[in-house]
Image (tube, rainbow, N blue to C red; front, side):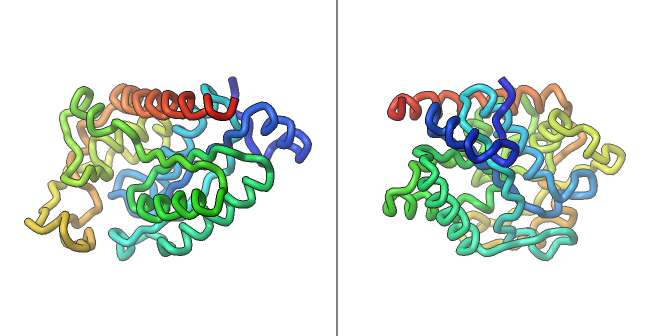
Length: 245
């Protein structure tokens, strides 16, 4: 079924839908450089596409995309916009408490940007302590395992992938018109030995923002990756919803 979008419903319609299923999905992304071939809104495109597919399968109400995130690693690259982790966490907590007043019991954060994870974890814990909606965070669950089966490339240590075969394949599937394919070029990141153990601006490891080889990407790989991620999120939410039926 087509996803129900909060901002396209009347207040009474929202109220009725939440009586039937007290689940809301919030896609979150970021605006940041993604090499010469992908748009700065790549994370937003992917978060929105995944959230829509999940909402179609589990119901609930889909909130408008939150398009800004914490972009410390790439903040000095052209096109990148960043907000602090504190700002992001506070926004999610305040929105979560507002949703709780509307009757929402379960909030699913569909996150398209790795840099948001720590802020979202902090927000979910605060919402738990404040008796807000039970908050789940989904940042491409299972993608590392899926990429081993589907792609030639692997995420970097720490699970990082960026403008490479993996991410470019997903964008080719959900928004092929956004890819400047003629500009796609490989760049192998130069990771220092202590990459995982200190803050590392990505200007130290990449010139373009590409971490791998996007020329290996195909829409078919992207479809398989997206479908695998969606299946994992749907399975968890269906399990969680049993407590609210």
